Length: 148
Image 1: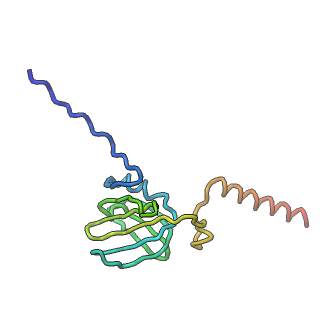
Image 2 (image 1 turned 90 degrees about the vertical axis):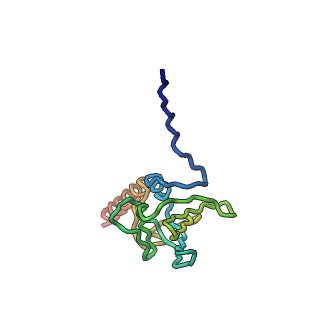
Image 3 (image 1 turned 180 degrees about the vertical axis):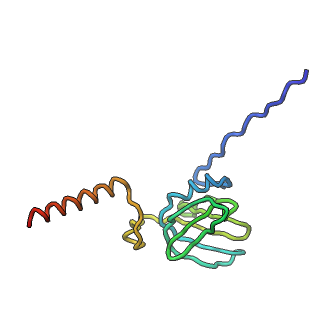
């Protein structure tokens, strides 16, 4: 009798602070909450653009482009082969999106301001903060009406 060989499934990858992600969903999750970043774009090791902006959308779509304009980043993980996560010499996170000789480096900013304070564009707030603002505005209106 020939025993059947059933290879054990490999465990899912585990990336802690450093590593490479090739799965598009993993890439999306890692990029989703970066907020405000410094970005550096290189082609063949030559700097093409750099700046600061807000990651407004991270998505996976074979038909749409990654767009970086007007301090806004719309990142399509399908525009890249993989995401390399590392730490710089100060221990801060660096995320490099790679596609052949093209690199988009993202460095999250510390102590970032809210999008309304820094970007001039309204971004949905935390639910508790949004409810508090609505209730405060309603209270102000009621107070104003009572004064008249």
